[in-house]
Amino acid sequence: MTDVQTALVRAFRDEWGQVVATLIRLTGDWDLAEECAQDAFTQAVGAWARDGVPRRPGAWLTTTARNRALDRLRRDAVGAAKLREVAAMPEPEHFEDDSGVPDDRLRLMFTCCHPALSMDAQVALTLRTLAGLTPAEIARALLVAGPALRKRLVRAKQKIRHAGIPYRVPPAHLLPERTPAVLAVLYLLFNEGYSATAGADLLRRELSAEAIRLARVLHELMPDEPEATGLLALLLLQDSRRDSRVDERGDLVLLADQDRDRWDHAQIAEGVALLEGALRRGAPGPYQVQAAIAACHGKAARAADTDWPQIAALYGKLAAMTRSPVVELNRAVAVGMAEGPAEGLRLLSDVDLPGYHLVPATRAEFLRRLGRRAEAAAEYREALRLVTTDAERRFLTRRLAEVG
Amino acid sequence: MQYMLLICGGPEAAEHAEDGCGGWSEEMAERGVLRGGAGLRPPHEATTVRVRSDEVLLSDGPFAETREQVGGFCLIECADLDEAVEIASKHPAATYGSIEVRPIWQP
Image (tube, rainbow over the protein chains, first blue to last red):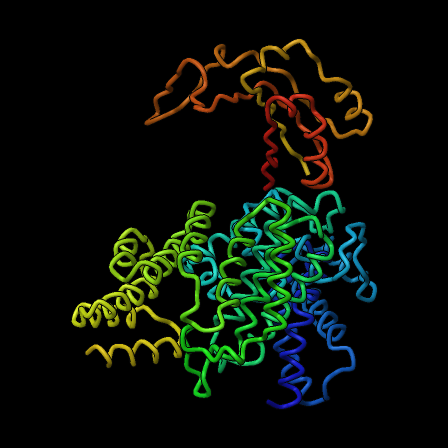
C-alpha cells in the first residue's frame, strides 16, 4: 500500500465515527452526515495524493465534510436555519460530557444507542454510523437480508428525525440501560474483523483489535458489570487464535488442525482469569457463557484433550438464554463431537437457518464422518452454493473432492 | 417539538382515579411546556368510529386488545424526546400504568 492509502485506512478507522458524529450534531440529519463524511473521504483520495497527507487528517476530513454539508444546505432552501448554525460552527469542539466515559469512540457509541430505538436499530445504526461498516456487512453480522437491514436503518433514522431523538452523550446514570447494545456492537465489530479472511487486509484485523481495546475501556469503566468483563474475556480468548486460523495461502485452518503453539497463551491466561472473576459474581450471561466455551478450547493442549461434553453443556445453557438458531447450530456441532456424528445430525434437523451455508456444511461433515459419502457430497454442493468468502469456498471445494 | 402524552392506566388505574397529578401539572405549567390536555371517561364509555366503503361503522368501546387503555392525554411542547420522556416519567400514572409519547405529525 502507498503512504496515502495507509493514511486513508488509518483515518477511516480513527476518524470516521468522529466526523459523522460531529456532522450529526451540527445538522441533526443522519443521512446528510453520512453522505458528507463519505464525500470527504472520497475527496481525500485525490487531495492527499496531490498535496500530501495533512498533519491532522481528522480536522481536514471534518472541515471538508462540513463544507460539503454547507453546499448541500445552501442548495436546499428548507435548511436555511440549519445553514446558519453550521456556518457558525467553530473549530471541531468537544462534546459536553458528564458520562465519565474515558474514550471518545465509546462515548459516541453510548450516544448512538438511544433506548427509544429498538435494540437491533441501536446496534445497526452504531455499526453504520460510528464503525463505518457497510449495510451489507451489518446485514451479514445480524443475519438478516440486505434489503431488510436497509429498511431498518431508514426507519430508525426516520424515528430519530420525527420523534426528536437528540444526539447527546448520556449522563453516567443512564449508561446501564444502553450497555447491552454497546456490548453487542463491540461483539459484532470484533466478529467482522475476525470472520473476514486474512487476505482481506489490515483494516479488518484492526477492527478486532479496536473492539478489544474498547471492551477493555468498558470493563474498566464498569468493573461491576460481569457481562462487560465476560465480553472482554471472550474477545481475548477468540483473538488468541488469530495467527493459526489461516495458513500461508490464506486458507482456513480448522480448530482441530491449528498449531496450538502459535496461540497467544498470555492472552488465553488473561481471558481465563477475567472470566473467573466475572463468574464469581454469580450472574452468568451470554457473553460469559461464550467466554467459558472459548476457555474450554483455549485450555486444551491438544485437540483430542478438548472437553466436548462440557462445551456441549455450555451451548445448551447458551441456547436457553439466547434462543438463537446459530447457537443451536453450534450446539449440534459440540454434541456431534461429544456423542458422535449421528446425534449431531439429529440435532441439526431442528436448526432453522435458511440460506446459511454453515448448516449444509456441518451436515456434510457429520455425513462424511458417518461414511455416507454421496449424501455428504450433495450437502457440500449446497453449502458451496451459499458460501460468500473465498477461503471458505476453497475449503468446501477440497472437502467435496475428498468425498466425491 | 410537540408531543402527545397518552396516559394509559394499568389494571389498577381505577384505584388511582381520584389521585390527581401530585403537582405535575403545576410544575409543567410553570415550565411552560403544557399546551393542553384532559382526563378521559373510562374505556367502556367510549365509541369507536370507522368508515369502510363510505359507511360509518360505530362500535361500543375501543378495540384495543391490551389491558392498558388511554385514560387521558396531554399535549406538550419541549426541546426533544429526552425532555418529553423526562416530563412523562414525572407523571404519577407512569408509576402504575404507562405513558405513550407520540410526536405530533409535522408537515
